[in-house]
Amino acid sequence: MRIIGGQFKGRRFTPPAKNWPTRPTTDYAKEGLFNIIENNFNIEDLKILDLFGGTGNHCYEFISRGCTDATYVDKFPGCVRFVKEIAKKLDIEDHLNILRLDVFKYIKICKEQYDYIFAGPPYGLRNLDSIPDFIFEKNLLKEGGWLVLEHNPNHDFQHHEKIHQVRNYGKTIFSIFKN
Image 1 (cartoon, rainbow, N blue to C red):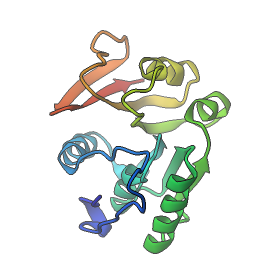
Image 2: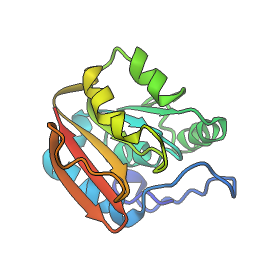
Image 3: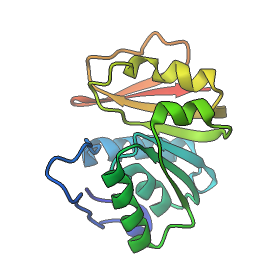
């Protein structure tokens, strides 16, 4: 895993386990996504939420590019421990709120609104298709905010009422929803 832009550009991190319960976004797909984000938002002004945060990859990328308000949510203790270690190494603990919670429970109790939400669930998650509706139902996105859902070709959101655009990077697809 590598940070591709900003003040930490080029820093590499390796999760500590062989059977890691994550699927980090490829550098190719992440670079494409961040080009889109930077052309549509001032990253320094964003309040972001990373659901199914895994390695923390997206949070580090946002903070490296100037974001000062990032929230990371994942339920796996090893992932949370890893993200806390990296946050300490990068000295970004003041910019990153790390929560060990089930994503669906967090969405249910969350009282915050975000400018940008990234959800990178396991591709085999049974209720993956319900994530956008659940987030919009709970009003987690600010007006004009984006939800980016990473998924594989087995899911199709092109007819969702809030779809803004779909970007395909090989087997990685980003469905971008706009509030």
